[in-house]
Length: 377
Image 1: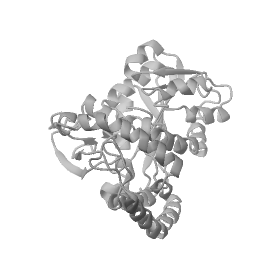
Image 2 (image 1 turned 90 degrees about the vertical axis):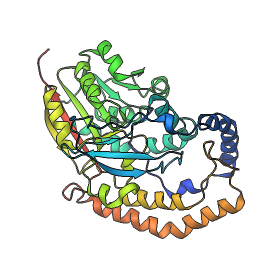
Image 3 (image 1 turned 180 degrees about the horizontal axis):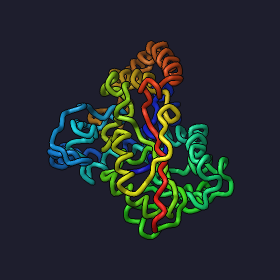
Image 4 (image 1 turned 180 degrees about the vertical axis):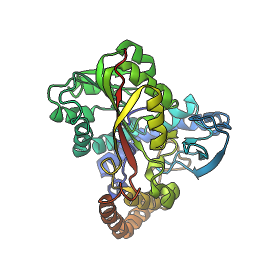
């Protein structure tokens, strides 16, 4: 698992055709990576999955139903993925879940490697989103003594959050090497690379704020991550969480084309009521819940882009069989996106209109909770 700093990337038509120089450099990298990927896939994808479980990982209920069957719609890596929903608590989870080897395979070249440049550009342009997240804490603490951002990636949130809290040191934690780069470039006071649950005992009581933006849905054990946050926080400190909302009406309307399903990276998607209840059990008091503010107005645009991308011939990738796409295939892809441009533009306009009432209409694709840890030691 790697960076999750901005949630799922919002694709756009510009990704349909890279510049000539970038295309040539990418082709060289793809050719170098292809033997390794083809060796990984020689025995199929079954080894990337755990046995299918018969109970809900959140509440233990055995009343499950299939919520979604889909493929990897962003990278187009081979494999089929199923999301089950618990009939009792509403928790949605990948079932069967990826193994450690599966997580490594499907995350590889998504946030880093081949995908690093594309996603780095996306994350770096979301300054307004990052400042909004930081400002949600301002009514409750004016100058946090120290802040830890979990799943920080390249530290872009922390860089912008300092504009809201200029006197606060921001640390970041991530599994990827991007966190070390962020520290070297000054976006973080300190960068920690590794598992939060394993590092939390060394951070006990050090932070006034711990943030997790689009991080918990990537975790194999969200409850363990929440317990780690409690350990890292000082008594009375704040935990700020933002995650996709599986109860969003777009999730049902758009089906597999709803971007926040993001298979196979998203393993657990919990309704807000579930997360509030679990936080209460851990000794937190939820002081803020927002649905409209964290909504990212890309649902219809992303759905249209994903559909076009599924129909059009793809650019080459080392996990795809066969020869690289020739000129004709590239022209066909460009033509399809050109014809689809008015649809994409209309979808983008509709997304902006929906954003005005997304929270009230249960169309928000994410929610945000701020919880205060109890004052006990």
